[in-house]
Length: 392
Image (cartoon, rainbow, N blue to C red; front, side, top):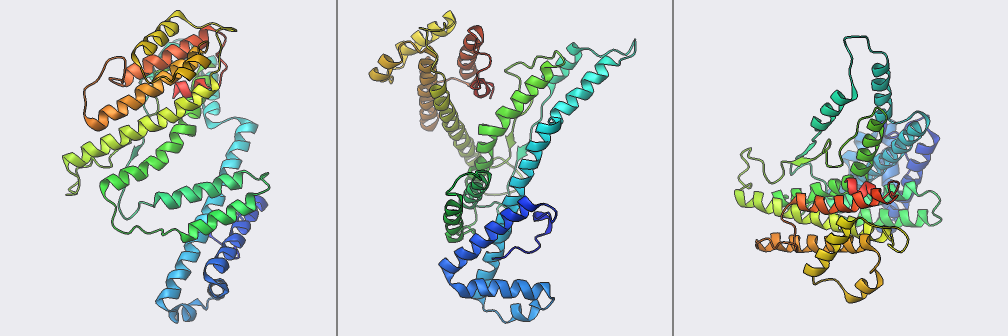
């Protein structure tokens, strides 16, 4: 399927973007032939050419319903792929801009720093005042949804895979993987069988939150803390300058399907998912933090906390305890994983909190993470990239 004009999706003066769009268009054309036969590709090309020449109305009027549906799907898939290519391209441009001139955050701090240096007597602004503002700052995007606007996660996931493959330009199997993903995208129904219910919408929102949790939020918060340090402002690790809210499953705008029980179920769903992705993050952290007390120490507080965990959490595997006996950070991370799993189970069953086994609240989890972080800082671990996870 050849690429034609796609609104803002293709920048005519950018060869890399045009190349990516052309590649995806060609692969989609091959998909159409494999999946539906050469007739569909020929129809797409004929319609594209006729529309460009101002003669498409006659062809479109003569199409059967079945051909019309396939034609719409082909063009819809093409524009989705073109949009993905544009998003990848824009991410590259932003990355290059950051490398050349710093991020927008760095430039904003540059202006603050310049203002601090050029103050006039009697109108001084100091770091303490800025710290007060920073500690009170709260940016809180709120997610909402509408049944007619919610894209299927299956489609979003495959478009995300296309984006990842486009970014992985050195992968020798990139073209094969892209072709496979586009085939799967074509075979995936972009329409839901029925109207999504509030819990379906809540699940759909988690698709976006996952990426934010794993990549964007930790990096933004780490960049923010680093830039603030340039003007002698320390952002507490427990500060929440960026958080997220959601109306999904809890809005009271007259939707009869949103009941108190639905709101409760939506909260349980999101809590369970939050625990699941936190467990994934802790498992990654456990692999990274192979710090051994045979080489570097740990704080007495962390050591005592690990001993407490070993006393109360029976789920530790004997083999793991034997192999990691001198790796307190791995032991602590594993204890956190067990306690999170027990917390999720408690929420699902509506059971009572058991001290030292599951977490009573977020503050208990943060206390454990802070023990790890403080111990790392106290023993020459301040540069460890794993601290980004602890900040999140």
